[in-house]
View 1 (cartoon, rainbow over the protein chains, first blue to last red):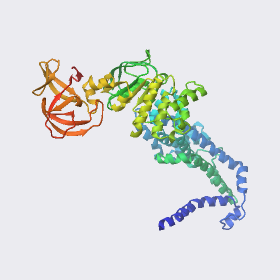
View 2 (view 1 turned 180 degrees about the horizontal axis):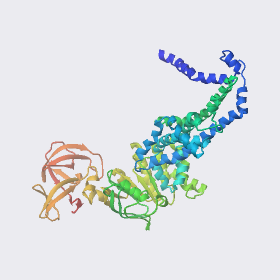
View 3 (view 1 turned 45 degrees about the vertical axis):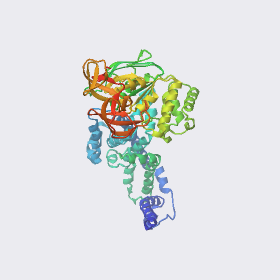
View 4 (view 1 turned 45 degrees about the horizontal axis):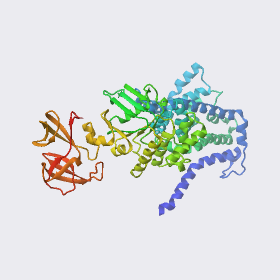
Length: 268
Length: 347
């Protein structure tokens, strides 16, 4: 009896703990620098949208967002295009060394991304890929492709092989079966995979910072370089932070149902 | 609805040392309900895959209406299959599942809808048409899967791979009945794979018994029961299966130990004697001395055996139709029997 009365409080406290930093970020984004450093306010006394206006009018800021979104989208696209056929092969065909290869895919994830910094930097500089969105996208693929193959294989293997056989008996070509029948069946899995590729690339900072110069500076890097002569621009920084959370939150919202299934499969 | 001819069909899996299926020859007339009966591992599923074109045979030919389809891929054979566990396209509703195979083959939307509704009515699933495939019970799903298989009016052959496995026992009879009825009315050539002889016997007009990758006998149920061509058929068909005893032929008489059982026109030598439980007469007047060990009630079966007893006779145990008490010492005589040599029936 006692525990059931306590439970809502514990849950509520935990939610508060989770949401507090997020709320503080939002509240900072709505205040002017003087108010942020000047006094302690739980609710902004004089809310302003000036910080957001600054981001949307200053090319350094909105270019940063555009740069980030470009390589993230590129990475997600490449990862899916490579991982879907690969996962299908792992799930449906037996070939020499398939088990070993499947595990070997994951070994890239056993080293921290920093290990690959130097080779990537040197390689891209010498072939003129440095400071392009493609450079970051390809570097991130090293991590997202194995992840995507791993997740997709689980979803694909949960579709019985008899579905493939029935489609053949129904007289469908492989292409028709694959795109019109098979992929729609695992669309939940596709959503989950997109989410993980997107999130990895969106929050990864180290590779993104090293492989970009002045042309394609990602938003996270822009945020770390806002120290100016007048000190730290707290409000704008917070506003940028709020905007950074939004794409991730949107993707989670769209794939929330399949996400549960993905976790249940134990591959995520 | 095609006439199916299989000639000397053999298949060896890529890494296997021996053939999974060897030298199978079979003829299924157009519109026949045919059953492939056999224990698991007999080669039934391989046979289905060869018929549908999912596998290419190592040897032999498959002909539909006299036309050699052996080199044709599955999608050019116009074969439909109902799988052990119902396969439907999840996410589509039942109507879409039924019309999909038609519209993909160039039917107009109206014609496809009309045909789908007709089939649904026939299978009594009209009220499910707008439901999503994943919301159905296993039984309903299997009905829809059957509908998908027969919805193409020009389908050459429908294969059923143990279609009742996933279905609850209480609805098995119903689905079997529906299948049989639809098969008869639409004159679809159907090949039904099962290890359950009751299913085979009630569904099919002709039954092929398979074992160890070979076809042992193709016949009507009655013939399989009374005149099995092979020892395995004798043992496998019927509940209980045939009694099989080692006996000897001497001078035109068959002997069980030192006692003559009756005449058998075979050359002298050992013979495997087979007889059904209901071909045995237990009475005190004459025959071999025996003892009733156990009794069980087998229910009504082919040949109407009601009570079956284990009877010990000249050191071997046989099953015989019997209703009396345990421990009796009756005389055992066998009214009718068959003989096998090397597994093949010779008398």
